[in-house]
Length: 424
Image (tube, rainbow, N blue to C red; front, side, top):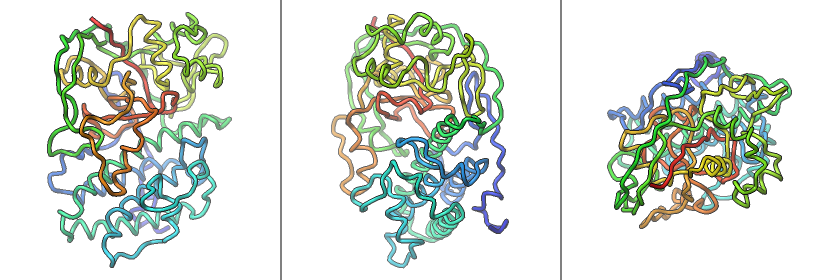
């Protein structure tokens, strides 16, 4: 590859230092708040796309091709799929656009039935061809066409889809970090993706804020970008509740373990207890106890567990069991949204996604779009639980108080943690 190619990974600074934000570990990336473009769609597009390449820069071609489990995807696939999204939903509308490779429609479609057939998700790691250089050439080809469209095309025809595509790519930036951490954790060498983070400061004193309840409004409503599942804004009834000022810490989780939390069926939902036995859970994902010392694998490699840091890589089942052990419960997503909007709780975003007690279902009057884009969120509204906030791997400016993340209740490879709530 030529060094003059801006999409050549060798031209991207591979350094990915950690940024300290209060007591939270966050990936250092520029603020790409997609709600504030100032009309510079060209610059925003280039920054988001370059940020994705920067995440891949420290990785070898072999690193980028590995798929560690069916739920994860190779980094190379993420680089291609996010490019496929722009090509498929924006560029192909123009009959004059020259498709880079028609075979990529099958290889890099994720789940869009309306677009056509696709390669099996669990076998993405078998796609050794195209190689990494061809994927980068694909990104360069699509980027050149997108820049020409942004600079000279009718913005009314592409603005909303471009905003969706950029937010979609930011979601995959976090998935890249989730997936490579999982892959590296299974490597006997346990390689580090980035530098060792500095110690976390002692957590703030746990406090509780009470809310009277009543009729409140939640959900997105406004001209700024939001995913379709964040609306429509609607009224809900809340009983009086109280919510914790901070997240559950590793130190508190170690107390749960020491008290037999993973051995007491009364604390667990039935399906969760089944997962404990079937999967052999005894601690959060990536934790290991060696001679009485807990360590955890992270993007910085294996390190001693910091008791002051928020616990992460726990499932909804584990969060729910911990809450029951604590004599508390998880907040509903409506309670979380009202509390976060009241600016009375810390660690709202930038540390871990926070499991809620709410199933991922449609809001009242929700209607997905009638085309392929309508498959983005709506068809997954079954068998999943809502997480709120944002993690250390979430791009800055990506989330909002109305943002609804979702995962199956047994999922643990996300940067997921917990905050407690209770009835009043």
